[in-house]
Image 1 (cartoon, one colour):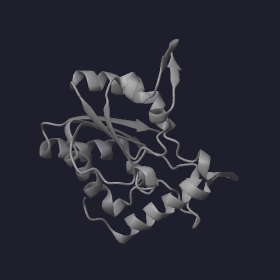
Image 2 (cartoon, helix red, strand yellow; image 1 turned 90 degrees about the horizontal axis):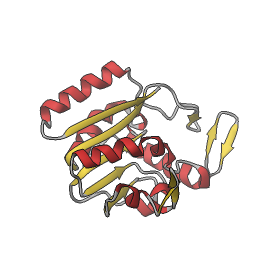
Image 3 (cartoon, one colour; image 1 turned 120 degrees about the vertical axis):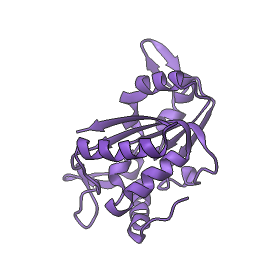
Length: 195
């Protein structure tokens, strides 16, 4: 695991509290049981399925999976019922990692064919973000799929700061990932934005 700033680890502790106690979203307090469920992944599951097939993947890590409910629960798409995302993607070896959730807090000890990281990178402190992204590449054999927000979140830390700690333009993010393409030429990159 990479080394990060003190603030990085403070942020992780804040997310542990969000998952347990909830978070303030505007003027509404969301309870912990409904915070960071992992549903932001849902709009990307078809795109990820295509990427899994193109890259002929047998293993996958969701890095920053939240509570990972899509991996645990049944769902229906186009009249077909699936046990969970593993069933939908037809991948048995899926590793869930999120340092804010006790159940998923063990850092991965090996590489996986693909790595998914949706709506996570913008939550990383600016001083740690390049090191963090480098760590993602070190965990993948074939591809990384990332979705990055480019606008402030509707949620805030107790001190009033927005939870999106590292906001950059699409152009800036694309330049960063071009540098990583040079460093990791054999790993396919799929970079998308929420704005």
